[in-house]
Image 1 (cartoon, one colour):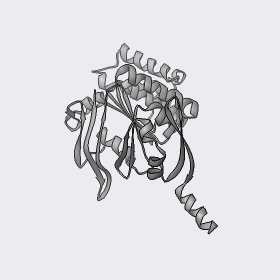
Image 2: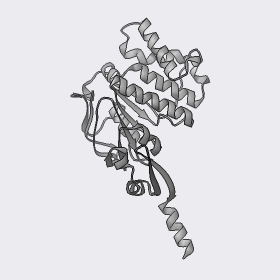
Image 3: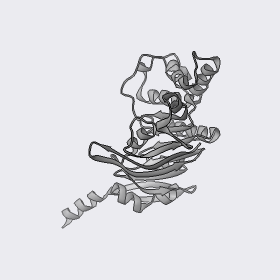
Image 4: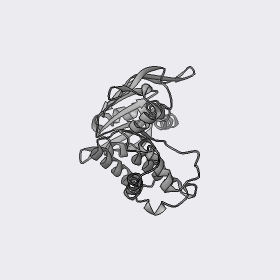
Amino acid sequence: MRLTVKDVEFSYASLPILREVNLEVAAAEILGVVGPNGAGKTTLLRCIDRILTPQKGCILVDVQDIQKLSRMELARAIGYIPQSVSQVFPATVFDAVLMGRRPHISWRASETDRDKVLETLYQLHIEDLAMREIHELSGGQLQKVFIARALAQEPAVLLLDEPTSNLDIKHQLEVLGLIKTVVKEKGISAIMAIHDLNLAARFADRIIMMNRGTIISAGDPVSVLTRENIQQVYGVVATVNYNSGKPFIIPLRSINQNRSEGTQSD
């Protein structure tokens, strides 16, 4: 299944956030979305999940405009993992993940649905949390629960907004490795907004770099994560090395720091 974003524009009141955004994500592909704070990454994901409605343009899942899908059809097509969860409802981890099966349940959960939940909990190594109340969990544990819920949903398109924001480095690698495996095996289209450029380079098939609501560069990690693009978009001087054909970025200093040091030395 292919996701297509065509000429999408979105503004809050008179403040433009997205400007003529165009992109495509193929089946079994992860598209990384990078850019500084305020670039429009989260707004883009919320438009794709129909939390927000663009003023212009359209978003298609295959050839279907998402604005014409019912809420249940949309839930079967798109799974969204937000950056943070501000409200935690009373439920066990098992029940919270089971909610991801709602688009597939006609009346009550079947044995297949419960088996899918258990499978997902084991995949994320949180099966020991199954009967814990989610309000008792740490931020990292809670992040894994909501990733599990989205995976149990079995959507055709998976949206991830900073999926590793509350995870330590070991669990970042485990979770992104699992997501990449699921995307490839299930033929899912995935869009991942992420701040860590090195994680984006390692796990994304293609990357778009955004700034001020516009796509500045798009392509494979090597062509997008260049010294020139990083300096232009982030205002940071960086060294870009390569490991197994993947770029590895070492930030050195901000351009403002250079200016400040230059002024002091004059």
